Amino acid sequence: MKKFLSLLAVVATPFVVCAQDGNSTEFDRKIFEICATIFVVGLFMIFILTIMKRILDHRLKNKILERGITDSVALSILQTNPNENRNINIKWFAILAGLGAGLTIVNFTRPLGIHSLAIMSFCIAVSFLGYFYFLKKAEK
Image (cartoon, rainbow, N blue to C red; front, side, top):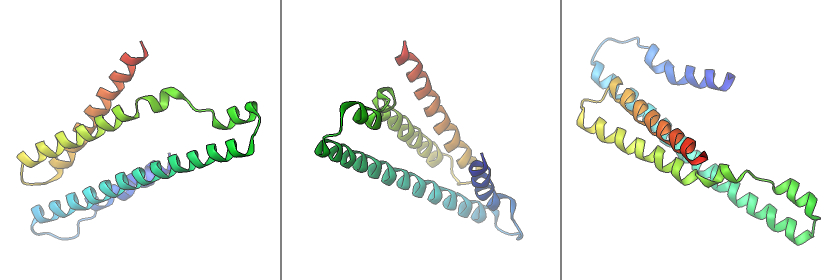
């Protein structure tokens, strides 16, 4: 919860701090560019961390096989939830489809501003909602 609040404070700071009067559309564009850059860097870092996790899991499995650890210990170490990894491709499809839809709508509703961030947030939320309903339907 503390991480979420601190992240929210960092993201909200550019919107609150405005000590200059002037061309507000240029200021709004800069805010949008900064937030978009932070979002893209965050997605890239998550991608890198996911790849590193998969590589390290693979190396761990190979080490366990090489050393000949007993079955009960190996199962306790390697125990994974199959439902978690089964739908990961659908989740990423939903996220990227929401991003694509949001960017398409933002392109048609120029000039860029705070409404662009609202459109992106709404599209990503709708994609997560669709993924949630997909998971509910898949459980049945």
